[in-house]
Length: 369
Image 1 (tube, rainbow, N blue to C red):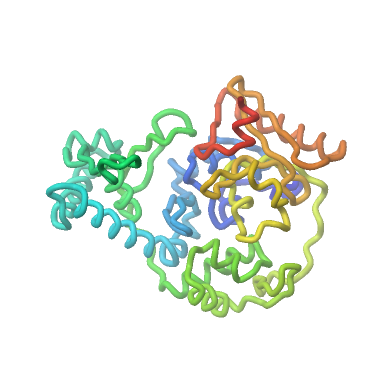
Image 2: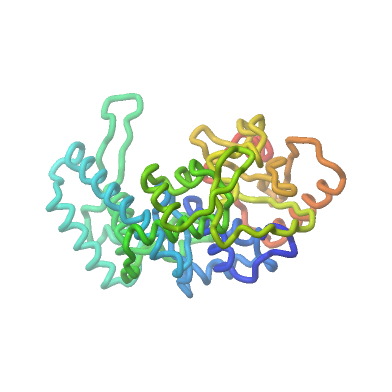
C-alpha cells in the first residue's frame, strides 16, 4: 500500500491490511492511514473513528492501543484485549489498595457504576466533566512517596481506562484538532464474542497475510502472547513453513504465490507506524546503526523515511509547518526526488495542522531544533 499504484481507497482498507493502526499517539492513526490512501484525507479518518464507528480502539496486542475495523475487532478483543483488561483491572485495584486511602474493590465497583450512570445521562463527557457527577474521579494516589521518583496518579484517568479496556466505553472525537488527546467518553455496546482459541488463530492468519512470511519470534513479539499460545495459533491456522534468510519462518497458507515487485516507492511514515513496528527482527529493513537516531529509550520508533522497503532516514515537521527529512544512508537522485515528492504530499494535506510525536526521538528533535 505504500507504492503509489497500490494505495488504498478507504481508511478501513488500510486498517484491515495492517490488522490495526497504532493509536497510542492519536496522530499516528491519521498519518499512517493517509500515507497509504490514494487521496489522503484526515476527515475520512475522523468519520471512520467518530461518525461511522467503523474503526474501534482497543487496548490489545503488547498492551498497545490499536484502531481496528469492526470486522477485526471481535478477534482482537477475544485473542488479546480481554486478557489485557483483566491485568489492567488487577493492577488498578492493587494500586488503590496499597496507595489510596479508603479504596477497595467494593468502592471501585460503586464508582464505576456511578460513572456508567453519569455517561448514560450525559451521552458523552470528558473525565473532568464526569468528575462533577462522580467526585471520586478527582482523587489521586502517590507512588514512591518521598522518593526521587515520587509521582501522583489520577484515579479518574486510570478508572476510565479500565472501563474502556473492559469494553464499556469508547473514545469520542477529541476536543481540539485530531492531534489532541482530550477525549470525551461514551458508552459502547459489547462486541460479538468469539472463542479465544479461534480468535487467536484468526488474528495470526490476518497478521501473516499482512506481514508474512515471518518468524515464530516475530509473531510472538507482535501479539505479546506466550510461546505456547503462539505455536498453537500457528498450527491452528495451518501456517505454512518457509525458509527465510533469518531461518525458519511461516506464511499464510493461501499466500504462497510470488508477489510482483511494485514500482520504486518512497514513504514518510509516522512515529509508531504499524509497518515500522511490525516485526521483532528488523535488520532486514532497518540498519542497526540507525536505531539510536530513530528510537527513544523505551523502544518506540519515531518518524521514518522509506525507500523501496527499507528505512533510509527520518523526518519531522517544523513549527512553521515545513516537512523536513534527513537521509541516514547514501541515496541516489531518484530516491531523493521521490522522498521530496512525498514530503510535499504530506505537507500539502497537513495544511495548518502541526504534528509533534508523543514519544520524541533523537533525529526528530534535531530536525525541529
